[in-house]
Image (cartoon, rainbow, N blue to C red):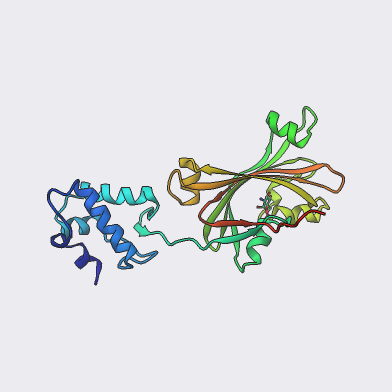
Length: 251
Ligand code: GLP
């Protein structure tokens, strides 16, 4: 069955069964769940849905907006509304000190970054404390949206002492590669993971619904000498990651 037939109102619209946009939203959800509108397919234009269903464009827009809010549909600038494809989950070990680029490469995925900030700044009191910076020093910051196989995965905000990363712009793909080249790749790290609901801004960047579940991860990495190399605060998509750890009975 095609979408136009599926949306014909005589089979699903009931005058007294609640708001029109809610009924249309449910019908569109059914179309998505049944695969009549498969992942990545585009929804018919608003005008066309309005014609088929005999509903106003305002009602159609409201129904689609609801689906965007739940994350089932995404709006792509200039090209309309699309059914969001479920993301492939990534299993991430908690016991290896690897970089994002390495993690994705081991799964056959190419990584790309969208740069949100990259440069030298005056450190915040928190950065000074966590990185052990002397007063009057600067900090290197890189903030990026990390993507794998064209899928947004995480937002990462890293702060490093300037003598460890004198030129943040040098980081184009992998931060750990750049640190490795200067002999500053961390050898140990402590990581804290907590659950968060994504803020509207973070959700928009990660391409998920506002308030969706996310994992906030803070990594503090050290050199052999015990010096802190990196403090990174990341927000990972909750629907894309499974963190796994091997546990042993201590002796
Ligand atoms: C992981 C860690 C970050 C680290 C990053 C380095 O994502 N959570 O703390 O900065 O890897 O990744 P890459 O070398 O790909 O830039």
